[in-house]
Length: 499
Image (cartoon, rainbow, N blue to C red; front, side, top):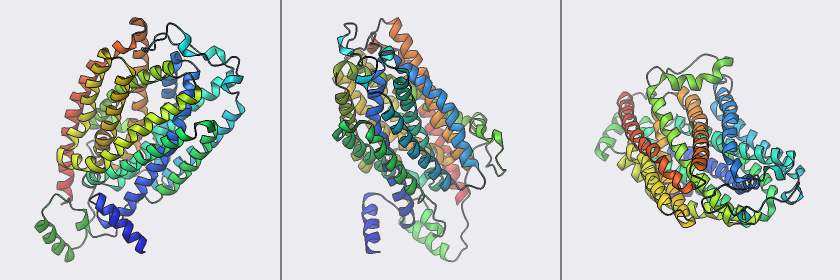
């Protein structure tokens, strides 16, 4: 018991939190720690496997992930809509499913030939005179391997992308159902810090154990099981007095007067505010319920605007991914070296993200607001696109990638999750998963197609392709501004209805 009090005191010293919020906060943060640890443990293995198939195949892999997502996202939505299954148990099932799937991936990877034992060794990408820092006309390794080797690497690439989106989106859906807009502004930074610690741990572990290769999949499977256990504690405490849920921005005098009034008045639960045309469903799910997420999105102008914001962000993000992989593939010859470099980059970025989440996220969200938070990434991305076009070097790409990820995970990602605190429960569990997963993959696929077209049209000078993404980035900025303003209006309505 004394240990519990000490832990609560440590958490309270880091973040402004009410006592009844601490259990859910710790379980949320630890759940993300295990999910991101598992993801970043296997991420270098996934990226290096994709490189061994040839850089020209990356757009095809992105399109393939879209089709897999179109199947998986409605199924995860359907699990959350089952009437006899609680939301907490549904989340455990999703995490445990990915844990078992990683074990299956390990068995398949071990059964497939290694890179040196396939038809021919993986092509040395740096020997092609046509391959430069821009990644022009990268060598294709598709024909250098057998069908089983290709199938396992392609399947693993798609599956890891699905794990990242579905597991994270489903967990956020549960968290924003437990927390409201006010508590989210205070606590999402701490939750995100758990995810960043997971990224740091997973990246460092992967860099130190790159020689283990596919055996890292078994460790990742264990981490996903830990995530499933942690998700059981993400629950809302309903036995606490209602005055603890009042916004912290009120004065101490107001808070004390409300405490005295609350002692002599019955406690009434605050209703959730649903967006127009999006009532909370109370009927049993039918077979068509797996498409409820898309129906809710199309029925809500607010959710359509959220979808546009995420789609534009995915397009810009994918441009940076293609640049990064092309540069690393033309710089590092060794397979283990590529995996280690990927992990080291992720570790370096995670340190800055963690510092920012523990010191800046809560203050920015509560003081500057959602509009500033979600507009930060588009503004940084605009500068990054110009920088890469002017200075297409590995240093510019590394700096741009660091700035992009730090801004995204310290400010924009927590702000993005606040967008869903003002919608109905159905929209949190159904529409949110579709937006986070399907819309994200639609943006990736669109970027892959556009990048491929620009690579051909520009003669392989992909660094200049970033200039053609500037209009997309400008539209992203405008969308972020109007979306943030709309969320703040809905949040005020939500607070008014709870008084």
